[in-house]
Length: 344
Image (tube, rainbow, N blue to C red):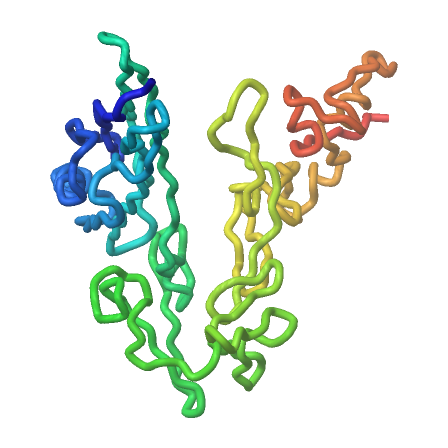
């Protein structure tokens, strides 16, 4: 028959690349708390500021809570892993998940001397996320991603008043630059100026007001606290980091060759570039703003290749395909060149 169950070994808990010392199978909740609290990634090396940990549930990870019988007469405790909740809280955002190295074993003694049954205890981690709001500019302003600065909502028209400023992360004045402190609390959604009127969320063409949160829900291509800002057309980026062989030129606003005019949603392209998304490198212009000085056609590379002649005869060249793009000829429809008129 089988003898009493016993537990042996332990486990390690890790957070953000750092692990505790070995936690024995019979360690108390207080010991687990202390082991985690001593990690530098919970303190000075924490990406979220100092973290607080609280362990609740079973007194130990292993416990004797069920019964079984040996030879139908003797009663022994049966060993199970218990439920333990580790609550980790930080000031801002969701913290990282814990990791586990399990070396926890259950050993059942047998009546045969010198023989025992051994198996690993099933020890698993399940993570749940926090519920604290974590949004750009606390959804009370809009983020200028070029500078990393929040432009906070502020308005005073008499009937419409609100003013959001930098907070400490808890709705009080602070230095986070996050628009999280309501120095004047809003009574409605942010409003944008349309003509001579102030309209919540810029009107139905731009967005609508969520009356439960007083946050504007912007329509496609519109953004900002009052939905008055617009995104610009996207095109394959003229420059950027390659992702692999033949993989690059990801879509970018104004193709990374122009500035987006947020009020109109139009790209202001750099000199020499054109198209709605600045996706074209155009032909030179003369003082009268004529392409190719008015003495030729401005053609994309693939068309210019087809028009190439030798002694007046077509050469049959192909640069890219008119209907199918190749990574090697990504510019065939984007770079333009002058095909000059003949002397005839």
